[in-house]
Length: 172
Image (cartoon, rainbow, N blue to C red):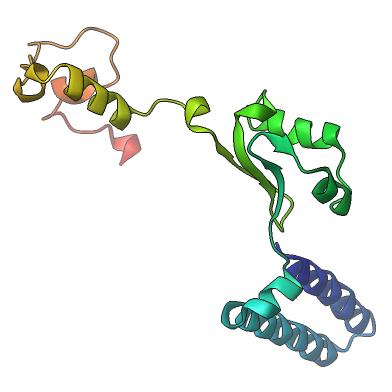
């Protein structure tokens, strides 16, 4: 939730409680309607105007650039290096030098981009490497052999064996 949403949700809770205690449901409905309309208006304005979005929500702050800490940004965010390192470890990053950029998002979460040398290898990249070094494997299809009976203990064995069998009555 954004800051505006959190404020409105807390306000709705406090404004609705008072009229309900006084047994005036109409006041509670009117108060809740005003706050729901205000949050919808705020979100509409945030989507239409970048200035309004920056004013209400804020924008991301870069805290690591090319593997080096930006201490001035950390001070503005009132975030210590230890707290930043804790967030990095929670994301599985153990070395600050592996980061191209790291940002603290407006919702408080950590966003990051790894350097090319630190990125994990994807299946697509692995296939490209294999195709470039072993082009003969590219056009060759591997035969798919089907076994006559699946090995015991597989989860699909019952489905393959009992296609015509009816389900038990207690499951229907």
